[in-house]
Length: 120
Image (cartoon, rainbow, N blue to C red; front, top):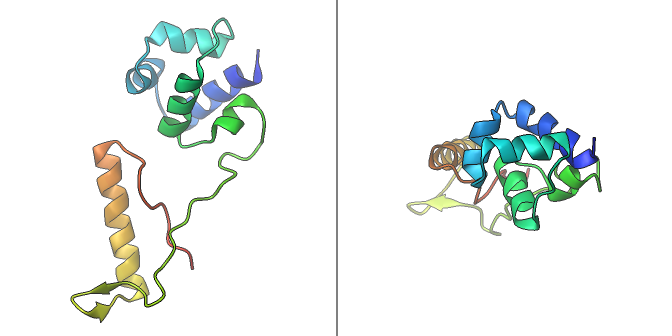
């Protein structure tokens, strides 16, 4: 079994997705996912990128080029003056609340775009 095949199966299960669910989310049939996981089929670069995005891992990880799930951590740069609402600076607790609301919105919208974490 190829590195891609074993890592795809591992990461799909880690994300608690069935083959049909992953297939639906990336636009391929369940049988195609099964072929990838069995090593009978090779995905296009577009499909590798889609799988990485949906499963929240790097394509390098899926392809066996690294053992790090996400070697390029994403971060949000804070403005020099901090974040404000109605002219008042937000506290750390308020920033965490905003971040959690953004993450819930992204999850319900089915997207992973936008900030992932605020640097400390």
